[in-house]
Length: 139
Image (cartoon, rainbow, N blue to C red; front, side, top):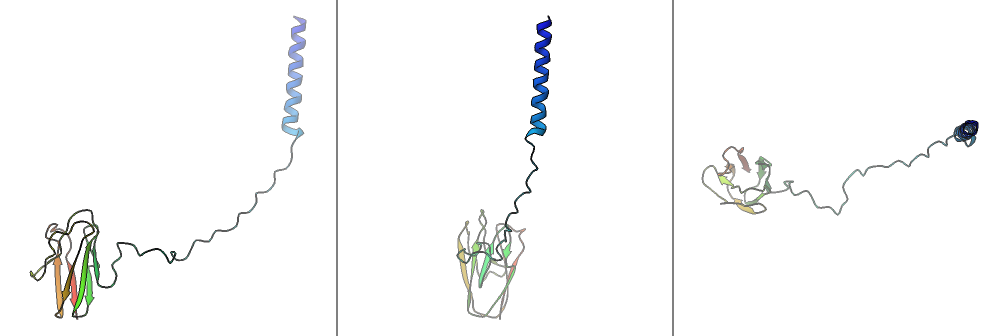
């Protein structure tokens, strides 16, 4: 019994000494973190990237998210305007007066029409009557 007590005492002493060195023996002050170089985001996209497919440019009207973009486009007489369906569903580009009708435009398909005479031309999607109308102003 006495031997057992001595063994327990030795183990306790070893644990105390080990704990002391663990917490204080190899203590060194932490080094401050190294500063990272600042990362500056680019101010413009790389020149080799194409324009986003949804962007209407020049004499183009995009159909996306059940809307014509731009909703109003102003062009000169004799200008071809191209309408491109960017939606995943079929649309039409149909003149409110019956002057032009694209027929069904599936996703990715385009329709062009030449506006010869000055005036204001409204159009719509005959499939989705709740879509806002678009307007071409010819000068």
